[in-house]
Length: 205
Image (tube, rainbow, N blue to C red):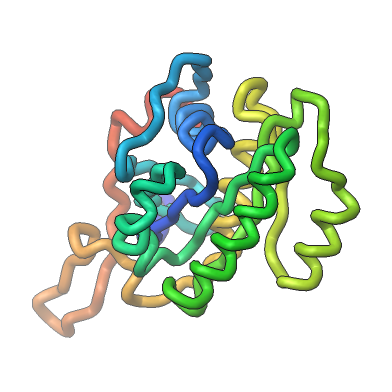
Protein backbone atom coordinates (compact mmCIF):
# COMPACT_ATOMS: atom_id res chain seq x y z
CA UNK A 1 0.00 0.00 0.00
CA UNK A 2 1.49 3.35 -1.07
CA UNK A 3 2.12 6.00 1.54
CA UNK A 4 -0.20 9.00 1.45
CA UNK A 5 1.40 12.29 0.52
CA UNK A 6 0.99 15.45 2.55
CA UNK A 7 -1.18 18.23 1.18
CA UNK A 8 -0.23 21.89 1.67
CA UNK A 9 -2.22 24.98 0.71
CA UNK A 10 -0.67 28.15 -0.71
CA UNK A 11 -2.18 31.44 -1.78
CA UNK A 12 -0.63 32.69 -5.03
CA UNK A 13 -1.41 36.02 -6.68
CA UNK A 14 -0.83 37.42 -10.18
CA UNK A 15 -0.05 41.14 -10.44
CA UNK A 16 0.76 43.37 -13.40
CA UNK A 17 -0.58 45.91 -15.85
CA UNK A 18 -3.78 45.28 -17.75
CA UNK A 19 -3.40 43.21 -20.96
CA UNK A 20 -0.03 41.66 -20.06
CA UNK A 21 -1.68 38.21 -20.12
CA UNK A 22 -2.29 37.33 -16.46
CA UNK A 23 -5.69 35.73 -17.07
CA UNK A 24 -4.40 33.96 -20.17
CA UNK A 25 -1.59 32.46 -18.10
CA UNK A 26 -4.07 31.12 -15.56
CA UNK A 27 -6.36 29.65 -18.23
CA UNK A 28 -3.39 28.04 -19.98
CA UNK A 29 -2.14 26.56 -16.71
CA UNK A 30 -5.48 25.32 -15.38
CA UNK A 31 -7.32 24.32 -18.59
CA UNK A 32 -4.52 24.25 -21.17
CA UNK A 33 -6.55 26.63 -23.34
CA UNK A 34 -6.06 30.07 -24.86
CA UNK A 35 -8.53 32.63 -26.17
CA UNK A 36 -7.96 35.99 -27.82
CA UNK A 37 -11.31 37.15 -26.40
CA UNK A 38 -10.69 36.99 -22.64
CA UNK A 39 -12.39 39.98 -21.01
CA UNK A 40 -10.49 42.24 -18.62
CA UNK A 41 -10.61 41.07 -15.01
CA UNK A 42 -12.81 43.13 -12.71
CA UNK A 43 -11.32 43.28 -9.22
CA UNK A 44 -9.99 39.73 -9.06
CA UNK A 45 -10.92 36.16 -9.90
CA UNK A 46 -10.15 33.14 -7.76
CA UNK A 47 -9.32 29.58 -8.86
CA UNK A 48 -8.37 26.46 -6.89
CA UNK A 49 -5.87 24.08 -8.44
CA UNK A 50 -3.91 21.12 -7.09
CA UNK A 51 -0.37 20.28 -8.14
CA UNK A 52 1.43 17.00 -7.61
CA UNK A 53 4.99 18.00 -6.74
CA UNK A 54 6.22 14.47 -6.17
CA UNK A 55 6.85 14.50 -2.43
CA UNK A 56 3.62 16.35 -1.64
CA UNK A 57 0.50 17.93 -3.14
CA UNK A 58 0.12 21.70 -3.30
CA UNK A 59 -3.38 23.15 -3.22
CA UNK A 60 -3.05 26.52 -4.92
CA UNK A 61 -5.45 29.38 -4.32
CA UNK A 62 -4.72 31.40 -7.45
CA UNK A 63 -5.82 35.05 -7.38
CA UNK A 64 -5.82 36.78 -10.77
CA UNK A 65 -6.03 40.53 -10.17
CA UNK A 66 -7.18 43.37 -12.41
CA UNK A 67 -4.46 45.58 -13.84
CA UNK A 68 -6.55 48.69 -14.47
CA UNK A 69 -5.63 51.66 -12.30
CA UNK A 70 -9.24 52.10 -11.09
CA UNK A 71 -9.00 48.75 -9.28
CA UNK A 72 -5.61 49.42 -7.72
CA UNK A 73 -7.05 50.34 -4.33
CA UNK A 74 -8.65 46.89 -4.10
CA UNK A 75 -5.54 44.90 -4.96
CA UNK A 76 -3.94 44.79 -1.46
CA UNK A 77 -6.83 42.74 -0.12
CA UNK A 78 -6.00 40.07 -2.69
CA UNK A 79 -2.23 39.86 -2.27
CA UNK A 80 -2.13 40.04 1.54
CA UNK A 81 -1.27 36.64 2.95
CA UNK A 82 0.01 35.35 -0.39
CA UNK A 83 2.93 32.93 -0.13
CA UNK A 84 3.87 33.43 -3.77
CA UNK A 85 3.39 36.10 -6.43
CA UNK A 86 3.77 36.30 -10.18
CA UNK A 87 4.46 39.84 -11.32
CA UNK A 88 3.79 39.76 -15.04
CA UNK A 89 5.00 42.08 -17.78
CA UNK A 90 4.68 41.98 -21.56
CA UNK A 91 8.03 41.56 -23.35
CA UNK A 92 6.65 43.79 -26.14
CA UNK A 93 5.88 46.67 -23.76
CA UNK A 94 8.60 48.54 -21.91
CA UNK A 95 5.96 50.44 -19.91
CA UNK A 96 4.63 47.16 -18.51
CA UNK A 97 8.14 46.23 -17.36
CA UNK A 98 8.54 49.58 -15.58
CA UNK A 99 5.14 49.08 -13.95
CA UNK A 100 6.19 45.60 -12.84
CA UNK A 101 8.99 47.21 -10.83
CA UNK A 102 6.38 49.27 -8.98
CA UNK A 103 4.45 46.09 -8.20
CA UNK A 104 7.59 44.50 -6.76
CA UNK A 105 8.11 47.49 -4.48
CA UNK A 106 4.47 47.58 -3.41
CA UNK A 107 4.29 43.86 -2.70
CA UNK A 108 7.42 43.98 -0.58
CA UNK A 109 6.18 46.94 1.44
CA UNK A 110 2.50 45.99 1.78
CA UNK A 111 2.38 42.21 1.29
CA UNK A 112 3.82 39.23 3.13
CA UNK A 113 7.54 39.91 3.77
CA UNK A 114 8.48 36.29 3.06
CA UNK A 115 6.43 35.90 -0.12
CA UNK A 116 8.33 34.36 -3.02
CA UNK A 117 8.22 36.68 -6.03
CA UNK A 118 8.65 35.57 -9.63
CA UNK A 119 8.89 38.14 -12.40
CA UNK A 120 7.28 36.78 -15.57
CA UNK A 121 7.99 37.96 -19.10
CA UNK A 122 4.93 36.94 -21.13
CA UNK A 123 4.24 36.97 -24.90
CA UNK A 124 7.60 35.62 -26.01
CA UNK A 125 5.84 34.41 -29.16
CA UNK A 126 5.93 38.05 -30.29
CA UNK A 127 8.83 40.36 -31.16
CA UNK A 128 10.62 41.39 -27.99
CA UNK A 129 11.08 45.07 -27.12
CA UNK A 130 12.22 44.80 -23.50
CA UNK A 131 15.87 43.76 -23.55
CA UNK A 132 16.51 40.56 -21.64
CA UNK A 133 19.89 41.80 -20.43
CA UNK A 134 18.21 44.73 -18.65
CA UNK A 135 15.62 42.43 -17.13
CA UNK A 136 18.21 39.99 -15.83
CA UNK A 137 20.22 42.83 -14.29
CA UNK A 138 17.08 43.96 -12.45
CA UNK A 139 16.19 40.39 -11.39
CA UNK A 140 19.67 39.87 -9.96
CA UNK A 141 19.59 43.19 -8.12
CA UNK A 142 16.18 42.50 -6.56
CA UNK A 143 16.85 38.77 -6.00
CA UNK A 144 13.71 37.66 -7.82
CA UNK A 145 12.82 34.41 -9.48
CA UNK A 146 12.43 34.87 -13.24
CA UNK A 147 10.71 33.02 -16.04
CA UNK A 148 9.56 33.77 -19.57
CA UNK A 149 6.53 32.25 -21.21
CA UNK A 150 3.86 32.48 -23.86
CA UNK A 151 0.32 32.00 -22.64
CA UNK A 152 -0.72 31.75 -26.30
CA UNK A 153 1.55 28.83 -27.19
CA UNK A 154 1.79 27.43 -23.67
CA UNK A 155 5.59 27.52 -23.61
CA UNK A 156 6.95 28.00 -20.09
CA UNK A 157 3.62 28.52 -18.28
CA UNK A 158 3.48 25.24 -16.34
CA UNK A 159 7.20 25.42 -15.60
CA UNK A 160 6.70 28.86 -14.03
CA UNK A 161 3.89 27.66 -11.75
CA UNK A 162 5.87 24.59 -10.71
CA UNK A 163 9.05 26.58 -10.02
CA UNK A 164 7.30 29.23 -7.92
CA UNK A 165 5.30 26.67 -5.95
CA UNK A 166 8.37 24.55 -5.20
CA UNK A 167 10.21 27.65 -3.93
CA UNK A 168 7.60 28.30 -1.22
CA UNK A 169 8.76 27.02 2.20
CA UNK A 170 6.40 24.51 3.77
CA UNK A 171 5.00 25.33 7.20
CA UNK A 172 2.52 23.50 9.40
CA UNK A 173 -0.09 26.23 8.99
CA UNK A 174 -0.13 25.53 5.24
CA UNK A 175 -2.04 22.27 5.84
CA UNK A 176 -5.65 22.76 4.65
CA UNK A 177 -8.12 22.42 7.53
CA UNK A 178 -10.27 19.91 5.67
CA UNK A 179 -7.24 17.64 5.19
CA UNK A 180 -6.42 17.36 8.90
CA UNK A 181 -7.73 14.49 10.99
CA UNK A 182 -6.84 13.86 14.63
CA UNK A 183 -6.55 10.35 16.02
CA UNK A 184 -8.46 9.77 19.25
CA UNK A 185 -5.44 8.16 20.92
CA UNK A 186 -2.69 10.76 20.77
CA UNK A 187 -3.97 13.67 18.68
CA UNK A 188 -1.45 12.81 15.98
CA UNK A 189 -2.13 14.76 12.81
CA UNK A 190 -2.76 12.69 9.70
CA UNK A 191 -2.88 14.35 6.29
CA UNK A 192 -5.22 12.75 3.78
CA UNK A 193 -5.11 13.42 0.07
CA UNK A 194 -8.48 14.69 -1.11
CA UNK A 195 -8.39 15.28 -4.83
CA UNK A 196 -10.82 17.56 -6.64
CA UNK A 197 -11.99 15.66 -9.71
CA UNK A 198 -12.58 18.88 -11.61
CA UNK A 199 -8.95 19.91 -11.07
CA UNK A 200 -7.69 16.72 -12.68
CA UNK A 201 -9.80 16.72 -15.82
CA UNK A 202 -6.80 17.29 -18.08
CA UNK A 203 -4.84 14.39 -16.61
CA UNK A 204 -1.92 16.73 -16.20
CA UNK A 205 -1.14 16.25 -12.51
